[in-house]
Length: 585
Image (cartoon, rainbow, N blue to C red; front, side):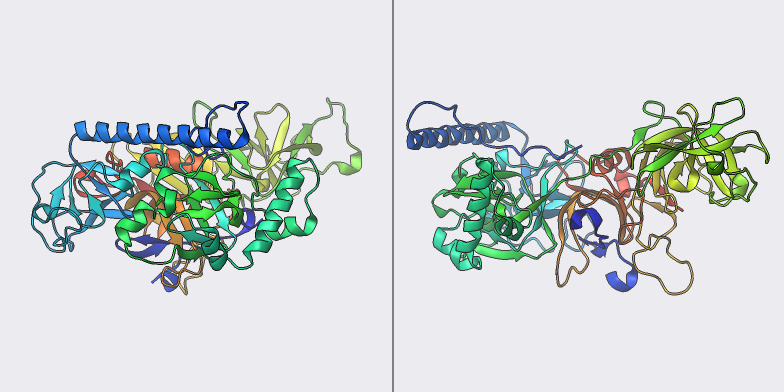
């Protein structure tokens, strides 16, 4: 399946220009279940009445939720809310002023003052009262323009509709993701006729969906041909009803606010290999649908759901101690050291004599932390039938020995050794060349080992596997190779809770939606979650540093600058403080 194996080269669509995990020549735990509208308990009433009761109660709950939200917002401090996917916060009240942050659709930020300031690029108040046009100062700093992409009204239809449909970034996976199987995006729930007009050979497709669904519900094997044509899409029916804001062919509140007009319901097709994110799902007229963060709808039977990797790193001092070894690429054999005093379980022909060799695994041989057994030491290492699973880890004692020209490391698992080339070895490194304050946070990324360690001063606090560029290091001389990760010492420049990434932002042949917990350290390169693969510890990316979603979320909260309340993105500098140091070697 492509999400597990494809190396991806993504560019991020940023306010400061095109950026992402590409070279300059090209660039210029499981997700949570979505929040669903509750359904009424089953009764012995006729089927039609039961469905009607479910829909009625779901509507009542939705109405109460929106009323409670509106009431809460009325009593809270005045805010300005984002109606578009991204609304920028400027350093000064001018569109030419640098961006210092951004808001996400449906998010609001507290106003410092209800008095708008005049400034360049904010003369169009949209549907708001013209007298309120201008730049509003927001907490804790910056200015947001009141135009058609923003509102001061806490009862705006989009905000009320988003009440139960917000991405939850307090969770490891704030949304759910899927790969497009030629999926259409509709600005409203389309009629059967509109669906047929928009989707090629829809009748045949829906027949396959129904055949696979009915076979599975009856405990039978689905028809092979129909199953193959669905390409992994889920044919099951969800239980939640059509959301009230989409009833009677109402447009998505986002579409009507940002792209008003009498236009066809289908907005676009999501290109193959691209992904979408969604925050809810519903069933209408015998078909399941997904609700995107902007409240557009996508048929679920056109999406292959992606399962983010459950892998995560370890907290030093709590889960493990350094040095330690992570198993990467594959399961790795355990080796046992046998001496004459021990009963052998292997034949003499299986034992390899111990010989000395040069250090060849460390980045700097003269800094090797290992205590080597002298040549000719008693004992021989024997390969056992036991293995460490891929992505598992084991602590090391610091003892090493050579056998047949290969270095082995002793683990804290009694009697067991690991071949160093089989593992990504993590040990503590000094912050050489980084001007740190006492206990200042910094990150150490090893391209060679495929690892990341977070520090407070000289104390390591967290360690994990990452996926660097597919082609390893970026050369400091000669032509720059594609899919390489730059080495050097950098600072975090931008942090985004989520952003859309693409290898070609101009053409958008394909893209990834809502890549979470993204941190740019050297434009266009970033640390970010990768929900499309689990090959951590291996060269995989287009140059960025890929992490599991869980690790990326923790790291996002660890680094500086911290994200102000209500903000989607923040830029380092000024009163926000300098970004955390990132050393890539």
